[in-house]
Amino acid sequence: MLLLAATYPVATFATQIWPELPGALAVAALLVLVAGHRGGRWLGLVIAVGAAAIKTRLGLLTFPIAAVAWLRRGRVRGLVMLGAATAAGLGIGWLTMGHPFGPYRRLHHLIPDDPGLVVRALGGLAFDPAGGLAFTAPLLLAALAGVAALWRRGGPGERALLVGGALTLAALLHSSEWYGGGAPPARYLVPMLPAFALAGTMLLIRPLPWRRLVLVLLPPSVIAWWVLITRPHFSVNPGDGGYWLADALSRRFAADGRALFPSFLVPNTATWIVPAAMVVIVLLAVWLAARSTSASAIMRRSWIALWLVAAAGLVLTLGLRFDSVVEVETPQVRKSGGSPIPPAGTVSRFSHRRAWRLDPGNRVTVPLHLRSGTEVVLDGWLMGTARHRGWVEVQWDEGDTAVIPWRGEGATERVLLPPPPGPGHHRLSITLRSPPHGAAALDRLVLNSGEEPPN
Ligand SMILES: [Ca+2]
Image 1 (cartoon, protein in one colour):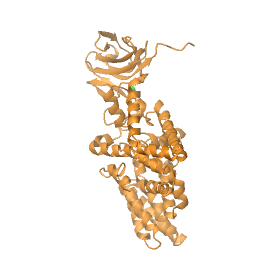
Image 2 (cartoon, helix red, strand yellow):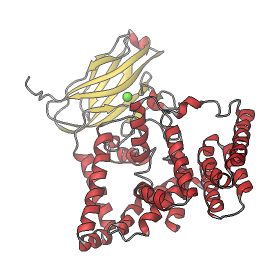
Image 3 (cartoon, rainbow, N blue to C red):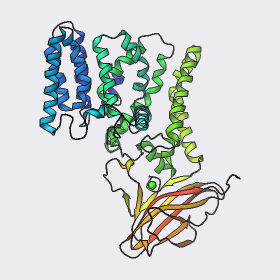
Image 4 (cartoon, helix red, strand yellow):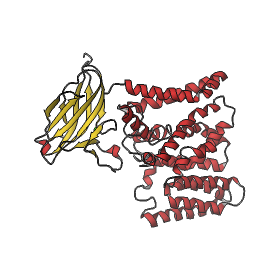
């Protein structure tokens, strides 16, 4: 319980404006009420309606639990009361927001219709660092292994909670905002904390050989709590596939850190490889712990060493991997002037084409790790007078400056840049020259290895 209270997400959301923790509290209070055998019906109804009045979505969790107390005292009366309470909850939404579900959602949104989005939402809620559980609350993800036991051994209140959790999850699957918007990771799952806690308890009370290994999963939650409480601006999801740790690594090591984190908003190779690797590692650890108590003890004792080795491996990979596509707007690129496209503050940045805007005289410096014989192509588009009279000044490291004409009116203009001085780590500076009222949007650098495979 202490672990749950003192780490992510409780200790983070407790300092923020989101209604998720009051939701979790309402759920916990309802569970206590329906666990008793008498009374609590009216209070339960008030809590359920109150939670739905704060946020309609919370009603999906609170009404099923409140229903337990009413339906066991007679079906007809219970249904009438629940119907009246549901109408009251929806009525409050209608009065305050113009529609029972608020301005964005409608009833048909409860049924997802895009299989690709369903996969992205489920994968993201589990593994996206900026929108899911794996990187900030891995203990909660591990607790899911106890859901079946909770269903079997729990009372009607716990089962109603799981039904409400499934409804809430289903209601997220239609939405490209499954990650909770600009919130800390997995915001929409936070009201289900009592379900995670009870499912986790189901694991801890059984003498499973690997249960004490869960200690290994504690550091990410503590670090996430500490970072987000001391640097609250990191808790705002940029919505562009970024994540504070990936971005800090990018800046610190002048390399593409985002390529190593599995974003489900801006999918990359890591989106499929990293979750698969995590699942394999966890299954391997469970298998080892089940086979040998000494292996389990060694893993448990060396939990800090395991994390340090993982962190060292991450930094080493960052330094050794070669770039293939580098987005110019990403954090490792040093910007001397210019502005982001779309502009700062744009919601759902992942749904827009993202670039860095250069006005005349502005410059970007891109750190690159190149294979031998790499050809560098700049993708972007031009605006204003730069479409007819634009140039870029290109410089590799401290070398000579090459001036290259860059003109055109296409949605994507490609320009071949001078060859790099050789393989390895280099810095490429690009400066825009154009008459006043010209600008260029630098989208990405595409690095084609010179050693094409023979056809
Ligand atoms: Ca881009």
